[in-house]
Image (tube, rainbow, N blue to C red; front, side, top):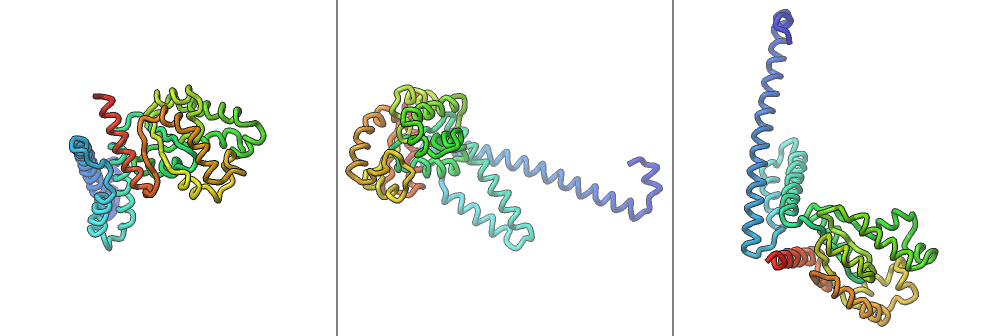
Length: 280
């Protein structure tokens, strides 16, 4: 504001504007303090990653995050902006996870396995755990075609669907730091296996025929099992595909009798071990 105009304003209005400017200056100073604190926090996160890798510890520890949230919640309890403060803190936690994931996984994590092995469930949970994007190849195909996979099989046949499956890998070839949940038959083609390995680590999620049946027997959206939803047929089909999974997989992770959190902890540990051994 021009000094001549300022002098013409009533004294109380001048004081109000000066007060507003002082508040803005305080906010600016606080913002700089927050920025410096966040930078130091991210440096600490990086140090923790190195320590955990060196000592073979679990990288992502939900219990520690819960402990931190509890302390912060107690600190701001009763403040009129308690919820907003906690929301900001949650975004800080997400950013910390992104820093860890970017440091650890510069590649894609490709999940393969028989239908019902838990690929979509694990990919979704792992994506939130690592703050990495989750992509589902079957979902990509459904969105492209505007119809269900069962309808694609019925209208165009399995070979047509397998071509679309290969096209999903081509569509993802330039992208990194994805968790990709792959269709159960994606390993049927050697070129698909080569494409997956060239873009990341291939993780085979395993399950027994009994577990697969328990997970799928109430669903009708699995064309290859429609009319054959029984353990003997599932066992037969799994045995036929097993050599292809073995050939494709860099890492094998069991899913029977485990929570999704336990599966993801095992997965992260084994992927990091695989990468370490490959680099060595």
